[in-house]
Length: 210
Image 1 (cartoon, rainbow, N blue to C red):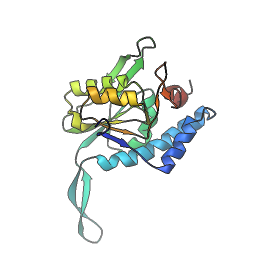
Image 2 (cartoon, rainbow, N blue to C red):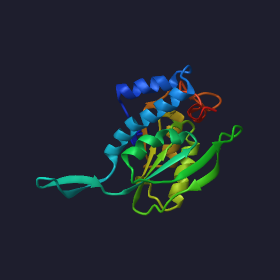
Image 3 (cartoon, rainbow, N blue to C red):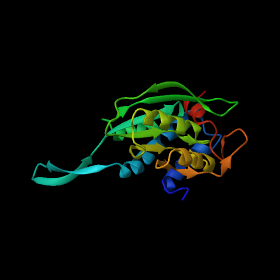
Image 4 (cartoon, rainbow, N blue to C red):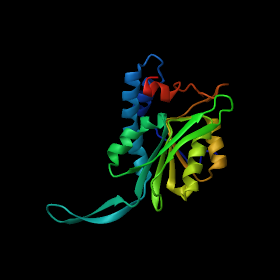
């Protein structure tokens, strides 16, 4: 099935926040604040799917059982827009390591151009790639390839977005079989300029105020 590895985060409050982000009248300041707030909601859902292990813990009264993350987490935003999803994950996972992938889209070919790639050691770790706008899927695919070329297993990579286009999802699932994708909405299509429709415009520009 095409969407077998896709989790759509369904929450009325997430949709409430998404409505604010979609609105062209939303100021850059409110857009940035709302994107940061939404990152907490997305993170709370994604964290359910991370690997955990059972542990013993001593409370002030007695020993009991609990669970703890079984793998170190690496957060990897795709610059610039990926920074908009970083805050929630960073606050919930204060010990998470961070990498950065810098890609921009060639406006003639719509292909990603790499300008930055920094990643800590990834052996036996879970990598969360943050890419809010999954349009053609080319940038996400390139980012996943960069991480896999460092030795990461596809099963240890999560791709996390805010919005996704069907064309981008199909592209990624064709090229990155087994990847688990999270998004808050699968929108209707891409326009002739490869922007998500209805979408919310350029997330990076609106988040950065440029």
